[in-house]
Image (cartoon, rainbow, N blue to C red; front, side, top):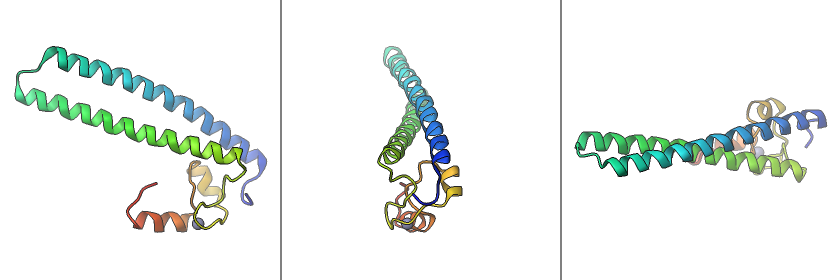
Length: 126
Ligand SMILES: [Zn+2]
């Protein structure tokens, strides 16, 4: 953890914890909304085919958003865990310190910019 001092680490940790709380709240709200949408579409049994496909589409959009938030939540948890273990700020692939500016911009980054680029070129986003 050569690149980041304790004060910066604590600040980032605060940001992650706050963000995690917001995200959990959002996911909670989305689940409630998702639940009520399904309930409404089930109870209503939309007869118009066009309307039905529209409501399917909306449900899919909600689910896509939800899983993205859940993925973010997972990344947040991972970053906080790495802070606890004292491994935060080092690349999980090559072990090099991750640039401070990168951590400030992407506090959940687990790879240095070079390894992230390689990783993404293999077709994976996280
Ligand atoms: Zn690396």
